[in-house]
Image (cartoon, rainbow, N blue to C red; front, side, top):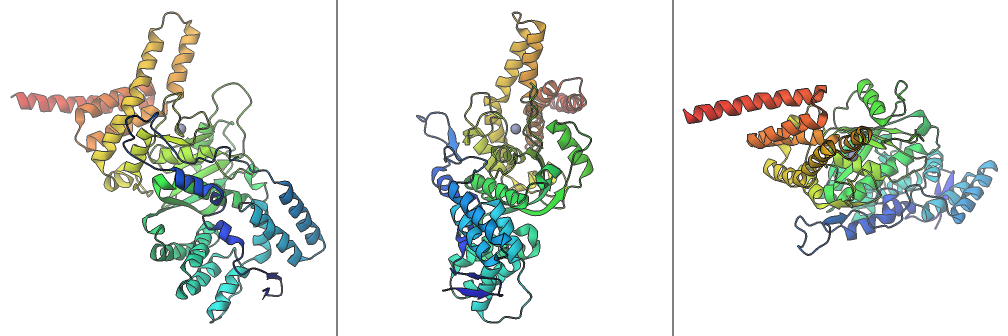
Length: 485
Ligand SMILES: [Zn+2]
């Protein structure tokens, strides 16, 4: 039965269409696949093949959705209604678009524009409060109020849908969304175990030029959350959008990221992330699509116009949780190349050990060490390093020794071995810090030496690692000397 709404348009189904958004935008389409296929086990059966875990088994889910013919036709009809000034008709067609494609950014953007925030009201009847939320489904505050009314009447599932939608729209009203999160913790069994990490999202002018870009950003974070949910049990929630153009940097992601860090303040809590619409350069060479600080709080990602799902973003998020690159050929999301959405067992172990880390001011001393099981983390790194870093190190030595290659070929191979996994130097340095904290000083020393070698002994970071190693060596020798006295 139609409900008259503010004289603007009618809503024909009281359930409205945000059932589709209950798991936050685009994610819902393949959320089921992600949840059913992800059976994490720390110790895979001995007979199993490569110890990988599918994070999302949807085989060919495109990162950039294309409109089906039905959606194209509905959008055309909506446009006809818009030009005729028939808002009611336009809303109906756009709503049908959302029914077919729950993450359609343009349709959401236009519907949000039409429905706007709910008027301030002193409505007392709970039916009215629910109706107000249905009429203004992009107003987080109205959604929270409506959800409370639903929860009071025992309609918990629907209340959860309203609240999750308010979280999806957190940037529009962070305080209402915070209330939504608190209520979700109270009424939803799933949310009880979930962590929430706020994200300060920065985009460049290329992204802002695309209509519906805010919905693209909300969707890309919600899809990453769902993709990694079985592993991290964390919702990444964009709570503010900012503009950032790396004007001084060439189209090189390391330089863009460096400029972003230099000119942006870290938020008091959470991740800060830059999305750039600058495509990978055409020239030959190694071009990054994403950069993240290992166990840090910042990342930069290239994103294609309209993409609502990003393997690169998931990969960079995992770096923030300490995940490390795997060797070429390993089927893993942590392989910098390839398309795999599986995650290898050593990285699963690392990320699980570190997923309670915080994202506040300070370094790993503040954000990581106090919140993790240090022993489990060190063990996870030791296992991963024995599979990855040591082999990589051997590869570098092998390349250096090789007499068959020309000096050019040789230096290219060294470049490949070091550049592609330059971050393994960071890994070694961080693992050394963890092992030091755990009292494993001999192993820490070995890793510091390796880290210095991987950075390049003549580079500033290589020298810093070497100095640390030498201090540690000194203190170890001091201990040995006093022990033998
Ligand atoms: Zn990476």
